[in-house]
Length: 154
Image (cartoon, rainbow, N blue to C red; front, side, top):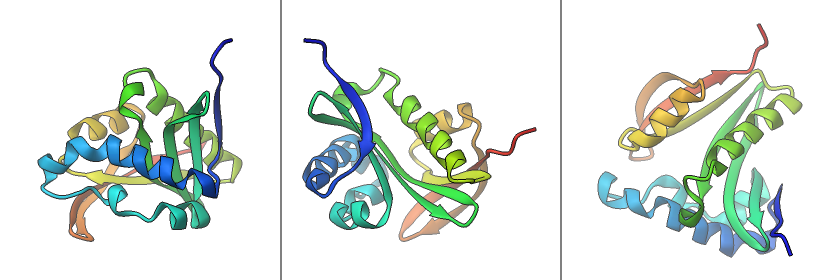
């Protein structure tokens, strides 16, 4: 039987799997930035209850997570994470494209995000996807790079 993949809204019973995926995805950054990245500190029962959270699944395994929050006319992308075993397969790019489509469906004219300044791989990916740096600041003890992508049609 062929494996099935889905992208669906996260449910309360996904909390443990989502938290475990986020911990696995961000673990390599702990040594680099000298502390756990912000997504590793979240209470995912609260995140799933209060934010727009989608999970990508392969059969029954959660392989990716996307956390967003609608803020006025923009979508704030709070977290995109892929399970280490699924990195390099285009899943992160798929989740980012879904974020854009979802934001457009909600009438957003842009997407904002931030990442730690030492997560250079993420900065390069976001630039390739059309995000532009707006500013840098220390927030909640993290040196962050803030970025935005316009969804306005030309």
